[in-house]
Structure formats: C-alpha cells, structure tokens
Image (cartoon, rainbow, N blue to C red):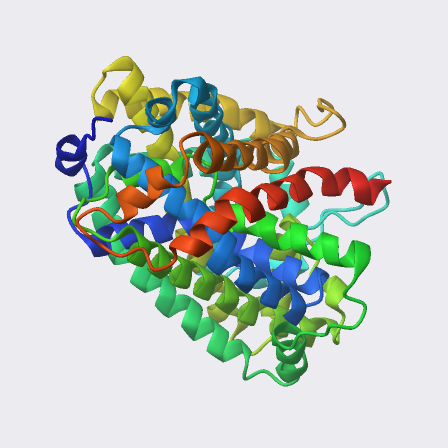
Length: 467
C-alpha cells in the first residue's frame, strides 16, 4: 500500500496542536451546545452523562482512531481513501462524502439563525427576542421572534449567505494558513467563553437543583426500553459531538503529520470535545431549571431550546443581556468551526476529483451549498407547503443524514476494518515510528464487536420504540 505522507505533509497541518485544535473545532459545534444538554435532560441527566462518557472513551475513541488512521495512511480525501483501503468499499467513500455535502447547507442555515441572534444581542436587543409577539398562528400558538424570523425570506437568506461566505474565506486560505490559524485563535476563545458563562450560571439562586439533576446518576428504572433509548441517544450524540462518519476525520487525518501520535491526539480531541459538551450542559440545564421552576421538560429539543427558551432565560436573569450576548457569540463561533470542517471535507473531494485548485473548488462548493441551502431557508417561508415524507426540507436532510447515512457508514467502516482488512491495518498506522498502541485490545474489541452492535441499535431503535 503506497502511503502519501509527503503529499499529506506538504498540504497539511504545520503542528500537532494545530491538528488537535482543528479536529476539536470540527467536533465542537451545535451538537455540543444545544443537543447534548437537551438529551441529558430528556434521558435522566446524570445517567445519560455517565453512559455518554463511557461510550466517548471507548466507542468514540475507536471510530475516530479508525478514520484518522485511514486518512493519514492513504493521504487522500474520503472517497479515494476508502477505495485505497479496499476497492470493493469505494461506495462507502462516496456515502461518507455525501454526508457532509448534505449536512453543510442546512447547517449553514442554522448558523445564519445563530448569527442573527448574536447580532440582535450584541446590539442590545435581547429583551426584544424574549418578549416579541407577532400574533397567533392557525394552530393557536403564539408567533414569537424565532417563528417570525424564519418565516421571512430576505433576512434568513442574507444571514445564511454571510455565514457561508465567512466559512469559505477560511477554507480558501488553506489548511495551515486558514483552518489551523483560525482554530488556534478561536478554540481558546471559545473555551474561555464557555467556562465563564458556566461559572456564572451556577451562581444563580436555585441552580444547585439543576446541577444535581445533571451530574448525579439515578439508576432507578434504568432497564428495558428506557435503557435502550438512553444508549441509542448517547451513541447517536457521539456522531454529532465528534464528527464521526462524516468524512471529516478522514480528511483531517490526511493532513496530519506522520511524526504525531494518533492515539494521543484522539484522546486530547475527546477531552476537549467532551469538556465543551459538559460545560454547555452546566450553562443550560441549571439556568433552565431556575427559569422553569425545576421542570426538565422545559429543556425541549431542537431549535426551541436555543432560539425560544434560552433568550427568555437570559431575559429573566441578572446581567442577562451580557450573558446572552456571550452565549450567542459562543454558539456562533462553535457552529462556524464545524461548518468550516464540513466545507473543507467537501472541497477536498472536489479538488481531488476535478484537479482544480483550492479556490476554484471552494467556489463550486459555495454555489452548491447556497443552492441546496436555500431549500431549507425557504422551506419555512414561501415554500413551507412543500414537504418530503411530511418533513420540512431542513428536517428531511437532518433525518436522512443523522438517522440513516451516518450509522450505515460507521457500520460498514467497522466491517471493513474489523473483518476485511483486519484491525492490523489501523494498528500499524497508529504504531508508526515504533510507537505503542496502549489501547490496542480495547480498539479491537470495539471495532469488531461493540461498535457494529451499537450501529444496529441506532438503526433499529426508532422502529422498535415506535412499535
């Protein structure tokens, strides 16, 4: 197997810390800031946190090691990387490349929403978001700021375009001069922001009960269907939190220097990503508990938590305008690091397939992202009557990528490595340069047995629970 280490190093990260921060930046995004807290509240608080941590250091570790190793060993983008491992699994490369191509457009739409909220809070309009009312919908529900905003055409489109172009500028600058420098600056800023806000929210009167619910496991009733749902939710969250099965880690792995330790780097990425998710929970769970009088149902999932509930929470707390501003700046930065990694993955595929330079390839990706993203933008306004399987376009793209394509890609990656080329293919890359692979036995067990079972659980749980 020819290894393209020279090509990879010439176009890759200039330092180990640059790779770690960029990969962590890819992992840290909207999934950490709003999805992790509401899942923790929905599935038992401390018990979900415990299950998640166990799977993060085992399941998540194994899959990230696999993807980074494949990328570094082949030195290619995700399609050609899987083809190099085994030509029969070339379709797996296409599937893994299609995932970020479908996620990027609607992710940037949500990023545009965050950018709008950040702009309003920065200009002192936090209370307006919390209290605005635009009448009553046909369903009888009150139309608040969020529903009114996404129902427009011009404003959501403009913020979506701005968000896409900001990410494109970083990608066009390249790996070392763009993504690496951006990540080295942004990730420490993000960490300082989230630490500061989480410490502040814990000082609020009544936050202690929310903290107790969030961190202390309650094993009562943790059996049967409830256990299955919690495991499926925790494992599913790993895809969001750690950029698994999106082709991102394969792409970033192809930029990684051969002299850097894969095992050590993955552990550091896990720590950074899990810390941010945990701190996001410290911000949201206690704050919403205080606001709702201890009702965990107030941590409703999806856009409602970040765009409806949290502005009301900030409006009700001391210094809420300042904390709200810092929060939405944090969310905007976290979302941007993830969208950049998605765009870089798609751009790398276009560069490899068309042989065009980075800027031209990125322009193609921009046009594609805008065209597909506008379906999601307009799906809540003038095209709201058009649905697929009863879902708005954004919800449809989110469903097929996260509930179907990503688990399937991860499952076949486990089959490829565990039973076709064998785990030695990955272990040799991890141990390059006479390094030790301290977690070798754990890795083998996870890839061959545990990870495939987890993927099947994720795929069948929606059908079983529905029955």
